[in-house]
Image (cartoon, rainbow, N blue to C red; front, side, top):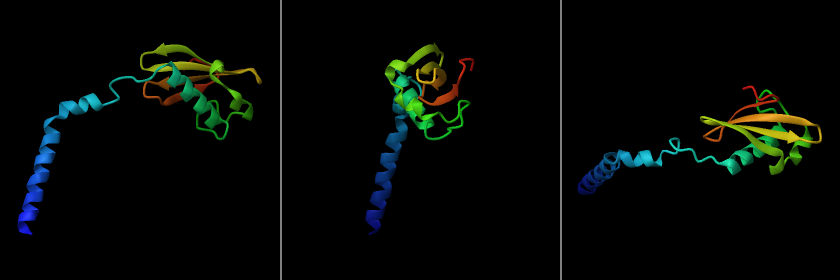
Amino acid sequence: MRNLFIFLVIGSAFIGSYSFAHVDRMKSMDHSRNSHMNEKKVISITIKTINKMTFKDLGYEAGKLPSSWETINNADVNIVNVYEGSYVVSATNSQVKQTLYFRIDDDGDVVAVSENKGF
């Protein structure tokens, strides 16, 4: 039993030392270094956020949206500007003639939603 315990301790020490010996490999797995955002993802995130905002207020300046926003599709969403590290996206609801602007960072997080694009 004692030999089994010693074997497990030594075996786990080897496994642990190998993983820490190659920390440079972990850098290549760090997804925050490279932006994986593209136009499709930004538009998809915008539409998903709009759909969530029709159910409840998510804490953005625009507040809870009326149910007419549920009909928004890809044609209603446009990328207005790409700043370093974030996208400004507009979404237009033709039924109520209202445009909202979304600021989305490179990680895909919605930073702000407003009725004007002056973030």
